[in-house]
Length: 204
Length: 204
Image 1 (cartoon, rainbow over the protein chains, first blue to last red):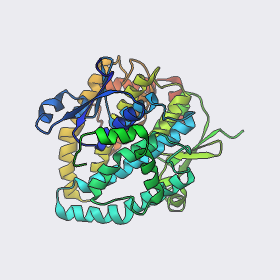
Image 2: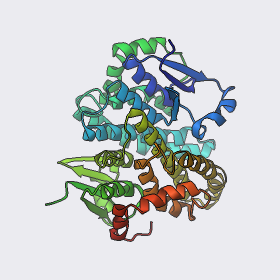
Image 3: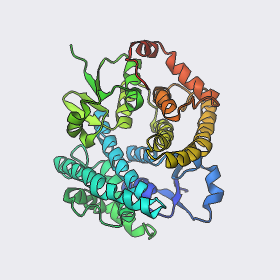
Image 4: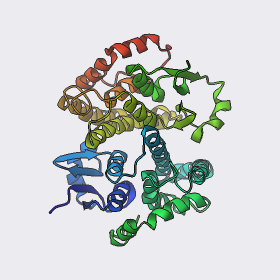
């Protein structure tokens, strides 16, 4: 039988990987469709708002990576016990995503001079500011980003970390031991270990 | 008795207004704290990740505007009937937020020459692309952004529209009648009408 879910994204980790981690964690089978650079121009016009990842299920389709990951988190029960816990988890995820966007503004800049200027701000101000606070948050939450236990916020960070490191061209968690522990705990989960062995090897 | 919720933000609509709309819609009383530009340097270091809005409730505090709005939406029952509906609503909200970020990249650019270049991309490509698709989505959903009924996605767009128009320096929905209707329906809700009359008058 075909899997009940189909996730379409590029052949990289990045914005598709949190959902791949979450489905894998919960043992939910999904069709892992990976678009090549050559295929993309034909596929893009058919995607809602020209974007992937796209999640298909039961004849329906939805885009937006964070929304898809939140949906997957509900299916595998890595969400909050009440609305306030969900708020804390969502806030942690959005903060990791803010960090990603700051790195992206630097990484995807084409003008070398402007890129250097942006790098000054990102690496001397923004990254240290965010990582210090996120690391303290992980210490306060017993080695997790929220709610003192494993939630999809941990999975989100662990799944997207290689992409963040790729954009930064370094290990951004070198001075954030509590965050490193958050990620390592995720990588050690049996179903995630299996996924890491099974997934296609990609540049990031 | 003091309200159970305290929302701290600047004295503008922008990222605080969706939550103000949602609480007002549901008749949930909240302390509407508005920071002045003079107060902000003293307050900023005490905010998580230096940001507002901040929502306080029952001795707890949380940041991140979208996460707070989603929490408020749950309290006033403007969320989905199931996880997939929530995904559709979240995706619509995130898409409106993408549009906001594209406008912000233009609006907050200080270099006049670069701002003009960014304006070309925003006003000739990105805005028309997003608005055409969001307008079609509203037509398909019976005058709503998702689920064929009023959800917090509609509230989010209606609440943030004046900020989008302020950044664009024009009525961005002039050629998007279905989206205009989405917003007008929200503004006509009795509790929102009351809020619009009661809220402080601000530049945006």
